Amino acid sequence: MNLKIKLILIFFLIVFVPGCFMFFSAYSACPRSLERIWSWYNIPIIIVMAAVMIYGSNVIIFSPIKKLREATHKIKDGNLDFEIERASNDEIGQLFQDFEEMRVRLKESAEEKMIYDHENKELISNISHDLKTPIMAIKGYSEGLLDGVADTSEKMDHYLRTIYSKANEMDRLINELALYSQIDTNQIPYNFTPLSATDFFDDCVEELFMDLEAKGMEFTYYNELPADCKVIVDPEQIRRVINNVANNALKYNDKDLGTLEMTLKDAGNFVQVEMTDNGKGISEQDLPYIFNRFYRTDASRNSSSGGSGIGLSIVKKIVEEHGGSIWATSENGKGTTMHFVIRKASGGASQ
Image (tube, rainbow, N blue to C red):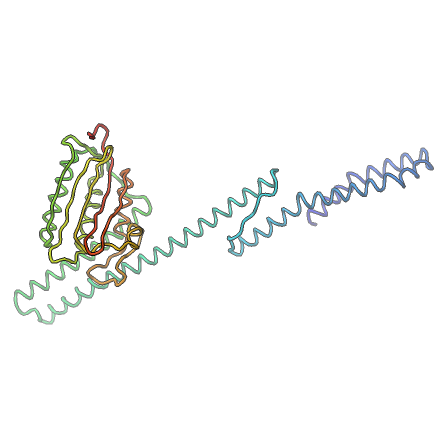
């Protein structure tokens, strides 16, 4: 028995039964006069009351319930692209509003899941593709060693160094994947420490200088910070940011002599770091998206400029966790500048 029939029966019990009881009681006392009054007045009134109640019940209760039922069927079928408008300010209207908020959240969750699944598939595809290159190189050079192709000490040294280099490349990709997984699930245990900005960045630069020099890139460093300036950072993670930007400068260098310039500036409550290279630059259409996860400006995916596409998204996440922000400026053919700011520690000097 549906709700409409139940309400009609309840109405009948509430109105008709007492009415009939009253009629028969009065009729037994004065049959003729009451019979006339009942015939011409009471019966039409009761009929009108019944019609009004049925119509009102249909408008107030049954029609909204029907809309909600249709909406639940759409959701059950996986259709979330519709909208339920609140028709009144009563409890049923509130139910409509709650249902609509639930639908919106379900749609957002479904869209987020689709994006997440797509990004994970893209990540697996990127990592799989980029692991093939060093694996094939290691396999090829190992076979050369086994077959005796490296018949001189120079060749053997070259083969071994190449195998070692490709193994390091694989290790870097795997570490990048592990770090992305930690960042994506907010599992990185940051260890924030107040440090002298000059001492910390000087230490970072010393390591960076040796690495870039070994790879044939010219590096210059300028520190415009007050001597007593302090920052509160996780040293390991900010080093990761600096090294990632430097590696990108190496990866996308197309000049005979690659250069990288790092400058520290006082920016009020922040320390601003600028890292400028003379590489091939980033096109204007690509620039707004370079910090998006899995975005790659190099569509060819060649071995010299390949990568998982998550490096700069990791950098962005780390900088933001330090209360800062990161952005880039670039000119095609001339180079790129990465700018990022991190907060000073309480009591750090500012100009």
